Amino acid sequence: MKKKALAFAVAALSVQAPLSHALEVGVILDAYHKSDETALNGRTEGFGSSHSELSLSQDLGDVATAQMTWVGEWNEEGSDLELEELYIQSTSLPGNISLTGGRFLADIGYLNANHSHSDNFSERPLMYKAFLGGHYYDDGVSASMVLPTDRYWRVSAGAFGGDELGEEHSVNTIGTWTLSTEFGDDFGNNSSWQAGVSYLKNRTQEAGHHDEEDEHDHEGHSHSHGAEYQGEHLYLADIVWKWAPQGNNRKQQVKIAAEYAYVDDLYEAEVDHYTGWYLSGIYQFDENWSTGIRHGQVDLAHEHEHEGEHEWEDSELKETSIMLSWQPTHTQRLRLEYRHQDAKNMEGEDNAITLQYQIGFGAHAAHGF
Image (cartoon, rainbow, N blue to C red; front, side, top):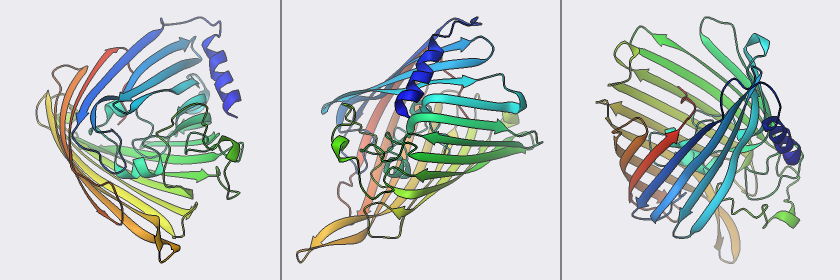
């Protein structure tokens, strides 16, 4: 399925249709220094770059758009370059229907379909790093529809190869299925909200084994984004509330966001389920300044040896992040963040200070809600 999906998207880039706009090029550079390693790392200790992007987008007449995004990361341990997106998406189907084919970010949860440079913190919440490898993109197809209701209501479904979810190739042609819905509305003139639920059916290891031939060779990629904790079913729920004077967030805004994840029918773990959640609050108190706090937790399990026998025990990781962000221009951000972790039956927890700088050039798609 992977080769077919990528070939489909590559073909779209060469369609000889009238182009209504010129090719758009965008670059995001992300540089940082992190004082210490932390459990479920999104960034490594020391100087580095995380999720720097080169993106190309093109309108294909009035019927579709094509998107390609390369993502590079480098640090003191090495470097990595990944093709994160290569897809076409319809723009003129009736009934507010949109079809997407190729490689793209799965439409699940609140954060997953967004590029990480639009996040409010330097790293994704623990639940994303544990269950989705930070962000889940894959080769496949999807369909979405905005329903004709007074309140915003959108539904989507997708089918993916599954090879990008974990470290091993999927044992099934269709490795994952996704379903999601989100809806929202306004509260008066000053605030708005959005809520959603998502489901991911993981079929990559249904047979209880891996594709051993490819287990240590994921097409030459280090694939550092693979989910470490997987099960057959992943359920997600999210809710977001925003407040700004007269709905204008240019100078002032409050944003509260929360998500919950539940994973069951676990692979290679002798416990019932995993869970994770986070709650975050962001206060933009000036056109250029914002601050925020986020607290989250994952409840997992790890195998250990006791009196010569292997046993599973529950583990827990909590994390609190506090950040201060300065955005002198629309395309630049300097963020200082402190992260504190507490763990039970889990190694690698620590405290860390991260200084992050982002700068963008060229065109970029509008950010989501």
